[in-house]
Length: 369
Image 1 (cartoon, helix red, strand yellow):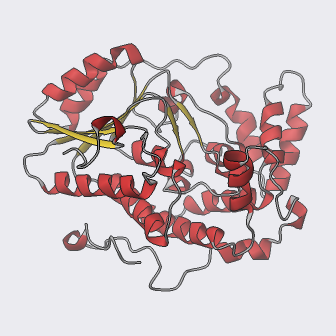
Image 2: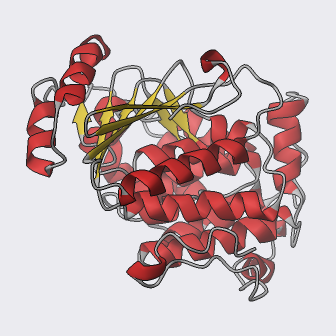
């Protein structure tokens, strides 16, 4: 099911089928006018078709190349584009058939939400994952207020606030990925998955386990610092969290705190406060509630409801690349907590994200906006 009208080297979602297995290969496009929204919609259409097709038993999604950030590299051109992304996230989390994601490179932003939401997520030593939104004046979205809020202790707040990177072993250790498979074994794993004529969870799991390895954390893994992370990130406010990290960083042997402090102090003060609140609210919210909240926050941020930091972050870090964002407000003390409330307020009724409430309309509502 390849995309019509494009050379296969220029496609971003390349669909292949063999027996009862459907394969979606995500590739970085060379076609400059290809937008992220087109690819999100294409993947959504394929997933809907496969879920409804009785012959399809297993769906495998694989990243190709060094980077699967394509969903955020393009500019979302309309509210409907953003809506479709959140709508797709819900359907991947709740997909009715067995899915396997294979990630062998950089996986950040929206692409991570698509890959880690699948029933099986296979990662390698080449994966590089982080939630960097605070550094861009944005928030951890696309279901990550749900995912991060369910990580051990206060690790979710830590990742959302500090942009700390996790490798493949660490992702498996915290439960964000299900299996660690060395990159050299992927060819053989792919061949075995292609040969399956089953979507049975136990069969797929045992097949992956033929190639996966037991995870042992490196000595310098950030996950070995969870007691300090929990102590710092359990504090009530961003300011108190930073103060606690400063205190820990002054102690001998805690040099690892230095880059953490650097990220926190360079990030958008408004973005940091929004992220902390969103993750903590996520602990008490369902997946649907998290996505609805995140959609509201995204729309209000992009409307500039309380700040234009998201646009300033994009300018400084991805467009002009001067790495000197001019945040406004510039400090945590200047960020009015009452104004933070405004980005969490409901939108107009005809704009709100509508999650399917019954099986009959599960794949409806794509174009509600």
